[in-house]
Amino acid sequence: MVPWLLLAPSAVFLLLFTYWPIVQVVLGSLTVQGFRGARRLGWDNYGHLFADQHFRTAIVNNLIYAAGTVLPSVVLALVFAVALRESTRLTALLRTLVVMPMLIPLVAAAALFAFIFLPNAGLLDYYLAHFGMSETNWLGDPSLALGSIIAITVWKNSGYYMLFFLAGLAGIPQDLLDAARIDGASAFQRFFRITLPLLGPTLLFVGVIAVLNALTQVDHVIVLTNGGPSDSTALLLFYIYQQAHQNFDVGLASAATVVSVAALFALSLVSIRTFERGIHYEA
Amino acid sequence: MKPERWHPLFRILRPTLLLASVASLLWAVPFAWMAVASLRQAGAGVIDLAALLPSGPFGFANFADAWASGHFPLWYLNTILLCGGILLIQCITVSLAGYAFARMRFRGLNTVFNLFLLQLMLVPPILIVPNLNTLVSLHLYDTLAGVAAPYCASAFGVFLMRQTFRTLPREYEEAALIDGASRLRIIWHVLLPLARPGLVAFAIVSVTAHWNEFLWPLMATSSPSTQVLTVGLASFTSGAEAGSEWGVIAAGTFFVAAPLLVIFVSFQRQFVSSFTFSGIK
Image (cartoon, rainbow over all chains, first blue to last red):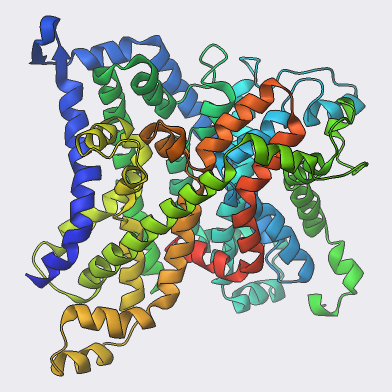
């Protein structure tokens, strides 16, 4: 009895705002609104969803966005961590600079990048002009906008991921690296044969977090491009937001939510394994 | 030769470090621009707006303008109330559940624990559509309590407290149990004081997350009186952008970002260990 009482306060909120909502979206996505408020069950919402060109674009964009943010930010984070792993005054300062973006709201980052990406007078164009590049509409050109949004995300998240790699690096015994050095292993070999394999669990964990962020953070899209131009920056969660906020189509919004819940559920299966492995590795 | 014996200058000039230094400085450019642009006096030429090298005249006119055209005192108050309220309730829910998972054996423990962990991934922004319905039926729409409600339980916090409680020796509580203390008294008087590092780590991560959150507060509120900093900044920015008041935008962004940045720089070590602790490694 006692354990259930201790779990009850958390459980009430989880039931109300995590489990019940999932039931609700599944039911909502299977409910078809007919004429005069008539309702029936059916797959129509999913039919409409997958036939919707905007939804398909959002899925493709989200895949590009995930690939474009996860890989570069994880690699950059790893490079930063390896380069700044020693504790000196200089590296401490540089680490601070890299970590700072993670502490500001994504909308604040968006406000800064609104000026950086401003055509002609903006920071990027101003300095690129010195290299002979002409005015570029970073957020207004459909072929560049998603790339610009990706750049903001990479800038914002790399420092956060670096922290995990720094912690992971601290857990690698120095004797191991010293022994390899004495045996004549090059810095390159030591990194790929010792450091990287031992960072495996951290790498997997950071990867999961990065994918999660790619699916759940669209603040900059909402503020900077509102999904445009011509849907080029619409992501899955932005699509859901748009259906719920602008089009008031509950069936379609529910079906889209079910798709993203399914994606996150799959991710959580992977990550629970990751946690378990991580704990094993630790122990 | 061991690195420690290298000449200090040579150590600084090592290629990886050099590359990282350049990259780190590049990383700081948006902040540098924010500082320079917000301090630059209005009336400077538009072309100079992008210049990163400080050139005068400087003043606080942009800050005054930003403060006057936004509702910053209200937004600060709402954000602090929101973060503080969430944290207070979370501390209760995660300590109790964390203790149950750390110390008690009961049927269904693993299943319930995995159900709890689901919330790590199924974050409230994803569930905006159904959660808005729930808020409306609970009459919590457009209230700060409604914005806070989905976060009152935290799978991450439960996990963190479970790990923290597990590191504590059992002897203390066993002695207290034998003396006839109730579980609640044990958690409150014996374990929580010992679990302070875990709670502090959780508090830092929780406050940072909710201070910075945008989409859910945007959706769950509609009137100006319930706006938090991020939502306020977004509406403030879109107004100022129309007038190309970039210095004012930089100042407003500073108001929103500064509190956490200042706390971070002052308590850096604590922050870093909290966030990596949160990574469960």
